[in-house]
Amino acid sequence: MNVSQAHLLSLANRRVVAIEEHGVTIMAMNRIQFQPGLSMPEFLKDYGTEAQCEQALEVVRWPEGFRCSRCDGAAHYMVCDGSRKVFQCKTCRHQTSLIAGTVIQGTKLPLTVWFLAIYLISQAKTGLSSLALKRQLGVSYPTAWLMHHKLMQAMAVREERYLLDGKVQVDDAYLGGERTGGKVGRGSENKVAFVAAVSLSEDDRPLRVRLSLVLGFTMKAISAWAKDHLAPASAVCSDGLSCFGAVTEAGGSHHPTVMAGRKPREVPEFRWINTVLGNLKTSLSGCYHAFDFQKYAARYLAAFSYRFNRRFDLRSLHQRLLIAAVTTTPQPLRSIRIADVRC
Ligand SMILES: [Zn+2]
Image 1: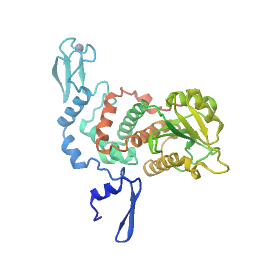
Image 2: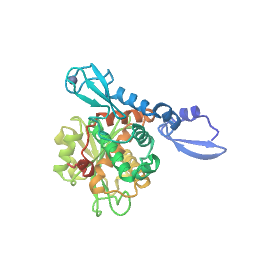
Image 3: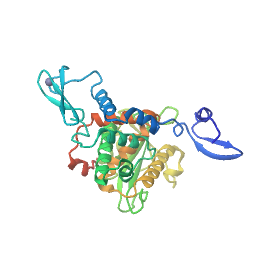
Image 4: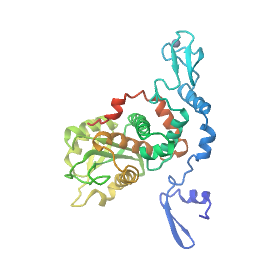
C-alpha cells in the first residue's frame, strides 16, 4: 500500500477512516489497528537469549534490586543450581529463583520459550489458540495449553484489580452452543451466561470492558455482580431486563432504555456494548475452534477483556503481560484445570 504510515495515523485520529487509493476504498481502520506493535525481529533482539530473559525477569521482579521474600534483606549471593540462577539471602539464607512465586514457577522450559509465548499472546490482536501456540513454540499440545491457561489466568487476576465507573453500558450475553460464540439471546440452549459491561468516557468513547460469568440474570446475581465490579457512583444503562435494577444496590444509578420491540443491537444507546460483543464473537470464532465453555469461559472472557482494555498500548503489551505473570502467584494444576468463578 503506497500510503505513508504517518499519513494513515493522522487520518486515523478519527475513529473510523476509509482510505481511498486509486479511487477504491481499500480498508477502514482506526488508530488502534494501525498502531505499531513490537516486531518479531525487535522482540528477538531484546529477548532472544536466556541471559536476556533472565535479566528482564530480574528487573520486573525486583525493580529496585533483589529483596528477600522472607526478611526483606537486599544482600545476597548467587548460587548455581544447574542452569537456573538461585539467589541466597545473606541474612536468613533463604533461597529463591527468578520464577519462584510467579505463575511460571516450576517450569522446566527455557525462559526464551515463555517470553516468546508472552510475546505471541500479547501481539495477537484477536487472541491465540493453544494449538497455534503449540505450533509456534514447538512444544507439545498439553504444554502449550498449560502455558496458555497460566498466562490467561495472570490476565484474569490483573483484570480483577479494576472497577468500572462513570457511565456503564450493560447487557445480558451468552456463550456456548454448537456454533462457536453460541446463540445469542435469552432462552437459547446449552449456554453460559455472562454480564457484558463497558464503561464510557464523557464523550461516549469506550474505556474499559468487563465480562463476568453469572449463574443467571436474577436480582441476586446482578446485585452481587454490581458490588464486585462497579464503583459506587456508576450510572448504568441497560435494556428493560428487570434484574439490572439491582445495580443500585451497589450505590449507583440505573437508567433502563425502553426497547419498544427493538433488540439491543438495533439501539444506538448500546453501540459500544454491541461492538464489544461483536469483537468477542470474531475473536472466539477465529481463534478457538472448541473449548469447554462451562469450565473455561471465565478465563477466555478475562483474556479478551485484558487485551481490549490495553488496546492503545500494543507496543508494551508483552512487558505488561510479563509483569502480570510475575505478580500472579503459582496456580496449582487443579485450579488451572477447573476454572469457573461466577456470581
Ligand atoms: Zn532473607
